[in-house]
Picture 1 (spheres, rainbow, N blue to C red):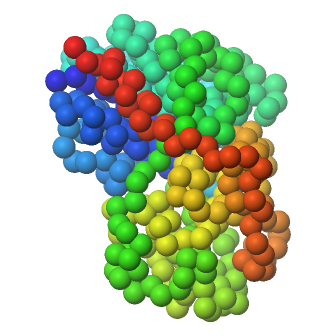
Picture 2: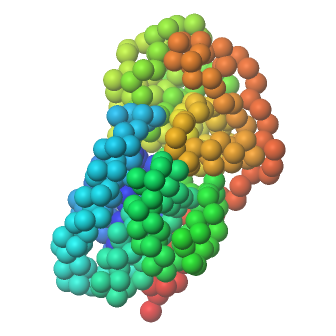
Length: 358
């Protein structure tokens, strides 16, 4: 039985969901494959995309991404401190995984996108493939001279990647020598619109049904009560368990369901900039309404891509957080270019399947 080691960065939920989407496709086309998922992302989240068979989990932390208090607020000094520690302790971080990979006979590593994993692959002499729309060096380098050494170290690690599957909304990713461009990745809805409406007793039409999703870190200051009471004939959906109980707000408690499952009944998604939400909304034909995000280089890539390829709105943060949601009454702007290809899951899965075939 061939084995794939899937290493996922420990930052939010988006890296986990897009990697799991690819893994789910791969398991369908490789009936004898076993996947070892190495991450500290919540297992319930991964299992909402992955089957229970032929998948095992290792709670391994190779990186941190960016330390944040919520989906928009970053702690750069704490991030630098932790990254410096990881760089200085990489040998002890990798040692147990080197022993594990040698013992279990893993055939290939796929990573999204912890830099250290390329060094793990070198140590056990197996290929390391990666998938992403950005590298962490791209995120850290604009943060000033104190991050320069860290960004250089990360770029060196990425230089040892054997193949990069570059996702849409991407930066140039110059640290990678072998790049394959692919289309959008994402999950496939589990329920039809009719089944979903029947399950939750929803009657509002798609054009007045809005999904509110702000990633795994959430956003505590959403003015639910003030904003939603102005739109009593609209239906709002959220996975935020801390949201208040309101008559026109459905709090989805079922952890087997994902934002993409709710998009079948939504005309638009309100979100912070994030690849996985944007990609799944594009795949589902949902409009994207987003807040700007300062200081995180990926955000502008996402906003530019959204404006090119999706019906969209970019909100003013002050009005949004003050409870002025009159944007709901405004039409979305049309995309400036054609839709993006949606073949990311298939291209990556087929490449891995071909490599692992005897």
